[in-house]
Image (tube, rainbow, N blue to C red; front, side):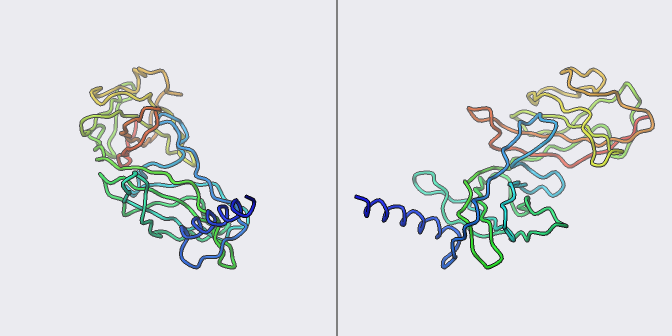
Length: 248
């Protein structure tokens, strides 16, 4: 019985080793862990989501002690049991004290495709950790900002926001003070369905704005669109590009 159990465990390790590449050496490095996905209306965004700057899928994970880098694997294929298969190495991340080495953006991700990802930590001698858990995400069509005009000015007390948004789903408005470093959120609205049009900052309909807009100051803003699964977790989403405005 003990021999059978040992053989089963050995087989499990060999199976996982195959995930990190044929012939890879399993290292004593700990398994990487993905940063949990934040709620859509969280002031601080974490976890998998669309990167508003590139339009790709942003991944975040916790650093693994002793790792010299990380490998990001991706699949867009599942088997008959809906398990992701045929993973491909898409990104090599090199650890450096001068770089952010615990995040990466899949810039080639396209809307309408469900992608699956896992991370492997790499040691300086070429060893690989066991793979992280697998997470997935699907991009949907991005909203387009219409008002205020990008780079334009609004009157204090009369700032309202409009956008073109594909049908369905929910949206969140993010407004940030760009005089702060990094930019500081001043309004992250509660999520609402897309039929809500031209909400006003000053109306602060959801009570989540932390301050009034200041005359002479510049801000940036964007819209996030998403759908929720049965547990309330966003399983797909999109973020508009950032827009900016100045308050008169």
